Image (cartoon, rainbow, N blue to C red; front, side, top):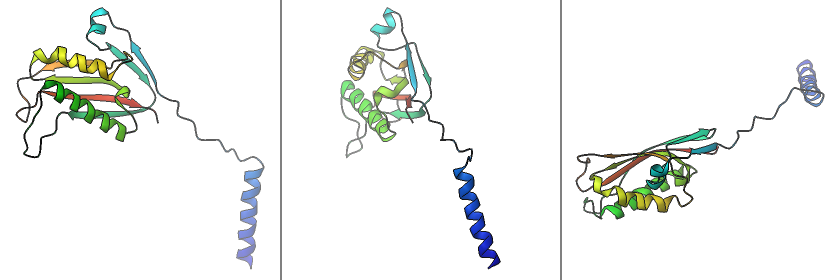
Length: 162
């Protein structure tokens, strides 16, 4: 009986405490991330990238290199434009699985097998960012990739609202 009385008094006291002024505060709300695209010069705009992107808040997603997927025979197929489009599609799918999309990219690094593909890449990238809010970017040419036939690989960082 004594234990029951103590239990009832404890529950009643806790309820009274909550009703009369427990210092209860709602969880702080996470603001949506803010993204500021630093405007580049004419050359940077023509090449389709921002010299810098400033973010505040949000979740950061670090993307591994994305490139084409081998066919059923393990071969890499497709010309440069097809490979670039597939790499963007795979990157977008990864970002969607993280709650975002390509529009959340704030920076990307592009590796090309041949510098002559740069203008073709820029054409595809402009299509993927029609609003002109391009991620900051570095384009690098390399001598080869880990798998023969790969012509492009892209990696990036995205900031997605919580």
